[in-house]
Length: 232
Image (tube, rainbow, N blue to C red; front, side, top):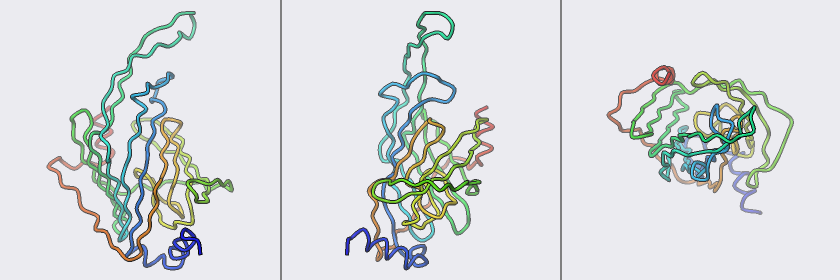
């Protein structure tokens, strides 16, 4: 039997055991494409991807940034909307130098600790509930059959259109960042054409339990609403 088919058969057959006693691993790659409110293209430096190690075990998951991002200030030339001239503008792209996100599905909560521009933030909140619309559209993502789902995410005063591709062949209710709530792991996610996240390097270990660590930080815990309020 094909190794991938065997793995998926084990997953589908023993899903209840997977939630409590096995380990799924891979990486999420986040590729920035545009900036919020900016109609110009980002520079090559700003588009460098962020790579997160993903682990799911014992009804918890972790996403840990494994390549450090750099905050960049790019000079961009773009045409004026009315006049036939080019104008220079600057765009600041802030990337995390540290980012850890832990989801606890048993308690429907998560915690996130990140550093951007030398400023540390620690979020502790409930896992958000998304109102997904599942569509009868399919495509293959890294060898897995995926189904399309859409939703709207509100953050920092913006409404963002989310398109996710999830695989019922990996029946865990999880995805990149805080996204969840679909009957399969999200393997690709597009956020209003601002960034695309893809899952790669899927591995499944049916005999190993991986302990998901708690976040250790001296930063004051905040909810998402408190963080958004501070940035307004």
